[in-house]
Image (cartoon, rainbow, N blue to C red; front, side, top):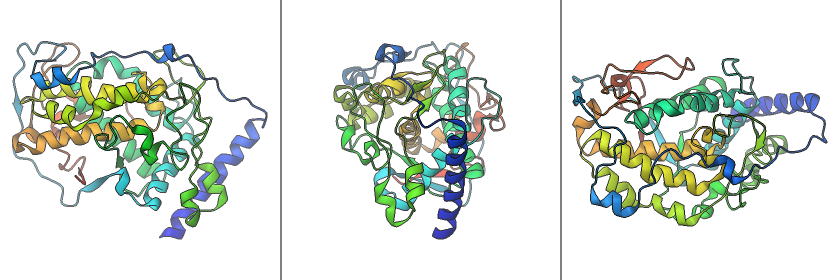
Length: 368
């Protein structure tokens, strides 16, 4: 199994590198780092811990005429995948995830999104196009749940991804994201780069599993992004701007404070403005741009953390995995029959299909 995975990954890597070498002169300069102001596209009010713990309503739209919709008992899958926190993954599992992301970056775009230059950027462009529809309203959590699953499913079907999908337990690293191995030269590159380009991101820990060619293929250093910032598009590098005073707000109190909310709509609004927003803004630069933040691959580990918190809230009351309330951007009440779209990257579903991660459509859970 190990040799088969390495052989497949090496083939993908080698073909990507050969294509790149043929198309781009070795003297091609790196894409520029943009001013931090270019990424200052935060739509939501960032909640303080006091606001979270006060229980004050933080919904951005009134839920007029919105009623709680309850799903009849639905079938559950028998063998759910388990999403595993980053620190609990093996080196081989981390390598499989990173290699699969790089595979998407090396594959051709679908052509559906004119701003996307590769398959990975299809996902970034999708998020950019739908940003205003799926943020600052109650569709935020449920749409991102399906978006994250779509990312995972594309990697599994197109890039040989077989490992558990990782999530980042930011409560353990609140105020000290740089100490996580995620933000190291071993994996996704540094976070403390002051808004400049990420210039490292190799995986020497994987040397016992992989050849030199595949290790080199894992670099996120100097990664060029073509979607964003904001609603515009242009070549720029993957940049970060760590701020511990912001990531401190991904702590367990923030998470439990939002999860103490009794209705989905109130909890979702709290989650969006609390750990979610602070995590994005604390990593900074590309991740602070609400439109094109998926350009930074750590977006998906961050949103798996947010989805995990959503699932923990559901676990506290089984009825929460079969009911919904709140409103969408237009003020329409969310119902279990409301469509959730990823613009054709995967088929449309209805909220009732994905409200329960243990249902037959999604079929996953978290390791804790």
